[in-house]
Length: 144
Image 1 (cartoon, rainbow, N blue to C red):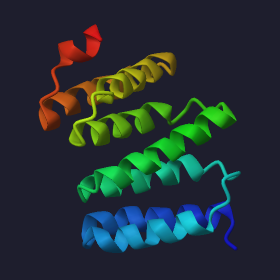
Image 2: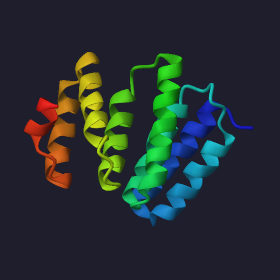
Image 3: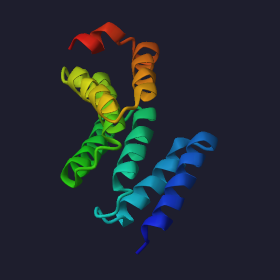
Image 4: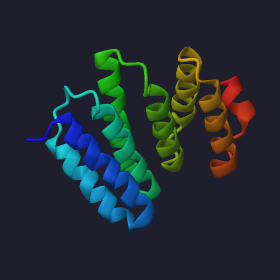
């Protein structure tokens, strides 16, 4: 078994490989980490987020959604607010790409957690990314 530090190192290697190599290599390492990690480790939600993100980049939206939900469930169970904003964001984007009508609810939760955590810069980045990459209007996010 691997401890949380070793899993973090492997996860970081996978994140670097994601930028240098085909995403399948990064995915392979992330899936390995997920299989080796105990859900009691604090890094679990980060691993869920990163695995969800790789699946999103690979346009495997169902799997992206699955891991974002696992991360959200972990954070809610452990009452860990930090990270929920990013997990709900990636969940919303996966839902958007799957044409699920709930995507706006997830994106609004992402923005709400940004506000709760005082992460105004991240909130702006999320709003800007929604507009730039997915043509989701900023006003739409504010009004729903």
